[in-house]
Image (cartoon, rainbow, N blue to C red):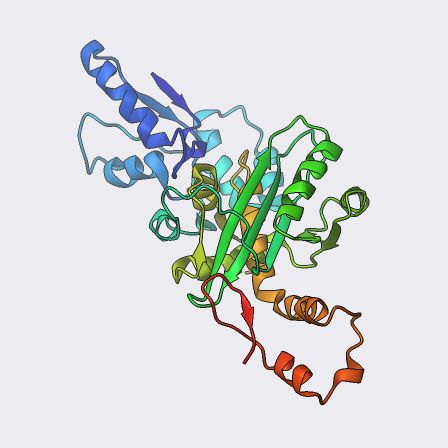
Amino acid sequence: MIADEVAFWSTDYSANPDDEILNAVRPGLATTGGPLFMISSPYARRGELWRVFQKHYGGTGDPLIMVAKGSSRDFNATLPQSVVDHAMERDPAAASAEYGGEFRRDIESFVSIEAVIACVSRGVYERAPERGVIYSAFVDPSGGAGDAMALAVGHQDHARRVAVVDALREVAPPFSPEQVVEQFSSLLRSYNCNKVVGDRYAGEWPVDMFRRFNIRFEQVARPKSDLYVDLLASLNSRRVDLLDNPKLVSQLCALERRTARSGRDSVDHPPGGHDDVANAVAGVAAALTTDRGAAYLEFCRRFNGTSDDNSDRNGTEGWRRLREFAYVSSGGRIVLW
């Protein structure tokens, strides 16, 4: 059997991680006596290829296991050196892996599977809307051709100081963007959300599309890499309560931290991977920490039944109590002191 480009196979919590595929193949090879070849350009320092290299390269492990490592020109002398030089000039880290046979040290796993699993509420696939709870939402838009479109809805559990994910939707391509926006808008209204936040990558069309269904779409200026960095702290400290969604866990665990030549880190999905669901969850977790002031004003409007202008009530006992409100119940309900 030949496992081609095994360094780029999934290495984390997913339907087909590299170790499970190879574990399924090895018993059959034991009866036939056939060899197992793993052929690949190196990538990050994880997965089956990295483990075999660490243990057996240089003849330090099982003598029946041979590890050969070399540059592209070692194995193919006809490759022009100019091709390698140009690649090194464009991206030294990537070229060192592709043409030099070196594992990349600028790419590491972003979060451990243990940290993610610890935040999952087992057997909870969706939480029904509750009265008195103020929800936030984040959407990862897509035009319907290449990427999936995902939506996450959540609320802040102020008693536990935890961001709770209540609903998660994903629609895989191909799809009609208008139909998906209509479906998502219906879900948002069920959680009493008249606003959804999304990134700027999709341009202006989500603003117009969601407006057709009476939902306000707001573009967030922060890149998704920053949202992931914020989410990491919440995952490691268990300040986020995730739904039992295997795809979400898989995408979170597959995220990679990359270090650019400038020294700046970025977080993104691996080559050929997707992070639509993970991005939606990271976005709603960030929205829950920034929407408190907006939620307060919304509550004031509901409490008073009037416009945003509350200047005529400044100084009254009722307005003083509104300004001193607190979140106290486990559902994130607003009560007054």
